[in-house]
Image 1 (cartoon, rainbow, N blue to C red):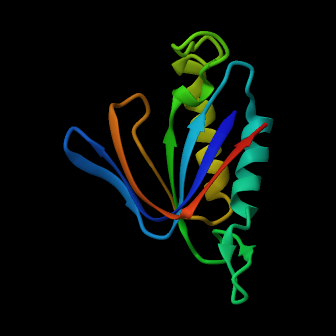
Image 2: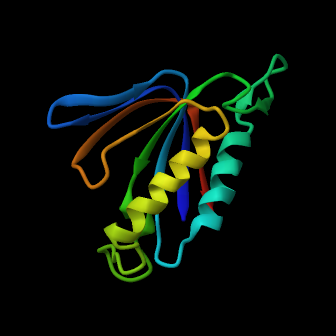
Length: 145
């Protein structure tokens, strides 16, 4: 399981020309579920994201979590994060979990984040989404388990 964390000033997801989710300060998460991923990986990564300290404190040091700053999260499923890029110029997706396995684990990950009291909004699983963001920093990290 991979989670791309982007610290944002704002982010939104549009589907068929309509904004379906948007947040202000917080994280845009792109979540890739791979074959073999399980609830323990989702739990580990949700805890890591909730406690990840990349917001700056009064001394301008990355020392505050999304919970500390009362931020929001926009969590978007993105199977392309599970792509195999080791051969050729075209990505392979054999390592990506099938939708019927990936969706429940993605939803479980979102529920784990919510259990920390963080407001979490989502995209629409398997939809053709347009994701807009204003990356703060830019500040982007790849977490995986």
